[in-house]
Amino acid sequence: MVGRIAEQAELKSLLDTPESVFAAVYGRRRVGKTYLVRKTFCNRFAFDHVGMSSGKMADQLESFRNSLIARGLRKCPPLKSWIGAFEELKRLLEHGKASKKVVFIDELPWMDTPKSRFIPAFEHFWNSWAAWRNDIVLIVCGSATSWLLNKVINSKGGLHNRVTKRILIEPFTLEECERMAAERGLALDRHQIVECYMVFGGVAYYWSLLEKGLSIAQNIDRLFFSPNGALRGEYQELYRSLFRVPEPYERIVSALGTRKIGLTRPEVAAAAGLNDNGALTKYLEELEQCGFVRKYLSFGKVGKDALFQLVDNFTLFYFCFRTAIHRGAENYWLEKLDAQSHVVWAGLAFERVCLLHVQQIRVALGISGVATNVCAWIGSDEAGRRAQIDLLLDRNDRVITLCEMKFSDERYALTKKDIESIKRKREAFRSATGTTHAVHLTMVTTEGLVRNPYWNEIQREITLNDLFAPARR
Image (tube, rainbow, N blue to C red):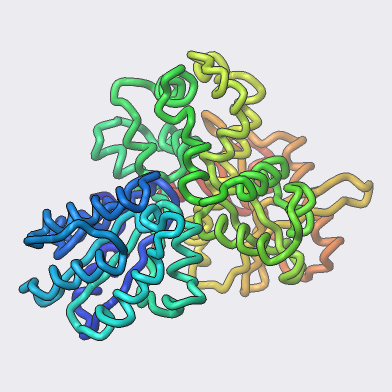
């Protein structure tokens, strides 16, 4: 299995605790939660079950009964309630001989059907029985992250503070995607891996759909733009699976997709047509926890002025090309590789890749051990022209690193116009903020910079090889 070393270690450590433990594994759809748990424990569970998508209560109970029987529970009667179902699970576990009995319930949110009283029964199973033993390892998982966060992890009811281990499964980094591509024999160089990452992000399942022998463009056409493309309807399924009521989340994401640097909370509310209240707080927090949105401060601003920015590459790709995706325009990507729409998207997508690999940028700059605030800045120069910096590293060594990110198929040749633009931003930033710290100019590019006269104006350059450094998780 590629990566997930820290997550596997966390899961395995559950077996070493002297008391029963309750773990929740969560993360966005298709990120590999179920695969991780099953591979870590080699499917050696005292009991395991998967909830049924769209199944009614009677269907869920019958399926649960079948799982009990499959794990060796004899004479299991038909189940009429969840209280009865968990009583039968207790009976199965009480006869188990393992010193630690691992119970894995996948797609737990699907089991909570209307009027089923599932949550009270589940709470009772843990609070009145499992928690008082020393041999139960209960692991729950589910794609409906919103439900899992609200009803289990951040529960204000009977499960309040009952989860003893929370394990967030994050998308792969570039380095992990490179290893996955190699394992699958895809024969991709690092530039091509970045191109894939700009479309799929680090979601393992999407990478598993890539077909050997096809170019990146051919794979993208096959998966998104062909009439039967496996990912044509994925955007809709993604948000429906994560959130029971997906509409407000989709409206927020749509609003953020229109603003490169992000929106403040009041701007999000206005653009999405939502009230600025506690519900909006929940929507934003859950989008952030799922990795779709990042919350950050513009330089010199306080917490209430935080910005929310769309950083999910898959969602960004969908927004940029959704018309063609819906139309099912075959060979669209191959034909648009040199189009302006592709160039604009590539620039935005590469910036998102860089923002997701700030840790690697800090290592390349030699400041991984220096306290650093990651922020952005937007303002105006003396002539009133907009000045925007998408990535600033405000370091504790009295240096501010201004990062400019450029995507290209070859070494990037800085022009006089480039340097004038970067310097204009730097001077506007200095003037507006009044900073006395040194401001270093750093270029983050795919293949590096051409050594021309303008190259000397840059303090540091970072390339793909730097972005592929292993993450320290």
